[in-house]
Amino acid sequence: MTILFMNNQLYEFSYFSPSFVNSYRMRDYIFPSRIWQCLLLLVVTLVISVPVTALFPPGFMMIAMAIAMMVPGVGIALYMNRKKEAGRSWLKGVPLPTVFMYAGIAYVFAIGQNFLFPELGSSYAMVQENLTVSYALLAVFIGPVAEEFIFRGVFLNGLLSRYHPWIAIAFTGMLFGILHFDVAAQGSYDIQMVRAIAISLNGLLFGYVFYRTSSVWASVAMHMTTNFYCLFPIGEFLT
Image (tube, rainbow, N blue to C red; front, top):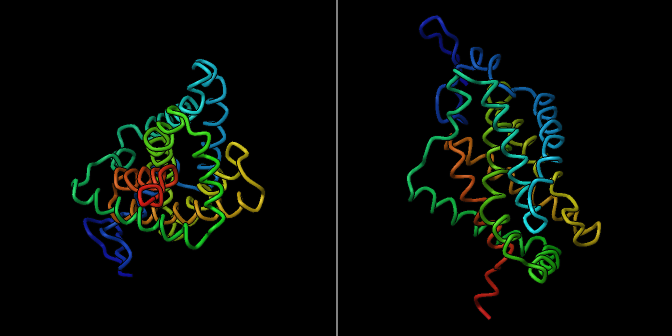
């Protein structure tokens, strides 16, 4: 790591970082930039999402939950970071070939996880047996956008301004997996534990890609691809 003084500002440059980071200047004004702030924002978002979901028809409850969690969390973060470029930088686009490349990596990673954790197969099977159009829309499109905006765009983006990248990526990855534990109460405790671990590993991958690209859209593409594989595994197309 190298420390440089430029224009009376202190910068640090690391082999792990793709660019210069004005850490001492950024860390004090991005929200959330501390772990406790992320947890507080998450709790507030969950509390706000409860009455909002009641406004949607029962058949769209899961989609409503995703939207109700994304809008307050992202809205609060953008409001707290208004007039500050760091609060919006993660919305920049990435080249389409890059998106396809990361989507391919996510698909291969999902196949590898299926071999590494055979227990995931039974969890996938239960989801596929009860698959509905609303659930498919949530899992493949709406859910990934909502979760990536929250976990990578808001939480990880803020934590990267204060903590070492691996600390920020590891925390958001583990939090991502923990919040997916026992979703819809499908499967035994052991299966849900394996599922949470696998999703945490996905969170680490998505987080690292977000860090390298500085854009949430690459991790959104990976998240969509991973969820697509869970609903329509490669074996379905080979049989």
